[in-house]
Amino acid sequence: MLLKLIFILIAVVHTGLCEHESVKRCARAVGACHLTPQGTEGPYYWKSTVRRNITEGTLVSDLEGRVVFDTIYPGWYRGRATHIHIKVHIGANLTNIDGEMYTTGGHVSHTGQFYFDDNLTDKVATVAPYMTNNIRRTRNNEDGIYTSEDGASMIAPIQFLTNEFTGGMKTEVTVAIDPTATPELLDNIP
Image 1 (tube, helix red, strand yellow):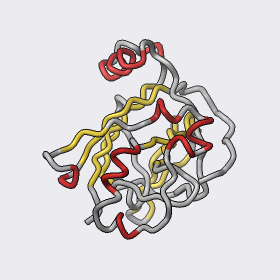
Image 2 (tube, helix red, strand yellow):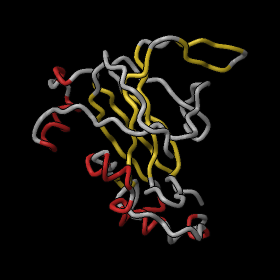
Image 3 (cartoon, rainbow, N blue to C red):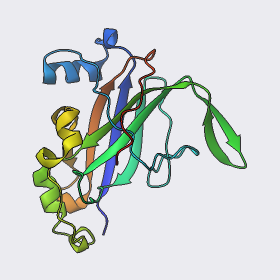
């Protein structure tokens, strides 16, 4: 059974918006409003359709920058800590082509990664199908991208939906971005 993860992402488009309640929570946690660190795009960026279920593609925020999506707890592969990628597009238009939603125009304002607590991933590794992955898992502090891109600040805080972690999880993260930024992509590493 793949473990369900509900991901709530709030993209705050400028640190001057520190009056937004989600940013206040973020600011209390870290002591001030800071832009979220840029990260590596990765080799398998999905460049086409827009979907709510990101096991299939990408999605669009509401007017406040809030995105809620369903996914699964990610697996792992050699050399990288358990993570997922994010990309924030500003000013893109949605186009319906043969029933599929596509983005056109605009620009990428932020590329980053979210990581997961090693202790939680250790628990996840004890249940099927995760337990069938025989690859030695790279821990966060062993991942060069995690350590060089301030990955500790990007660990997704997980809440369990039931008393058991196998009953589903959710996380809520705030990403503070500069909407005028057009950062150069970092090395295209997974």
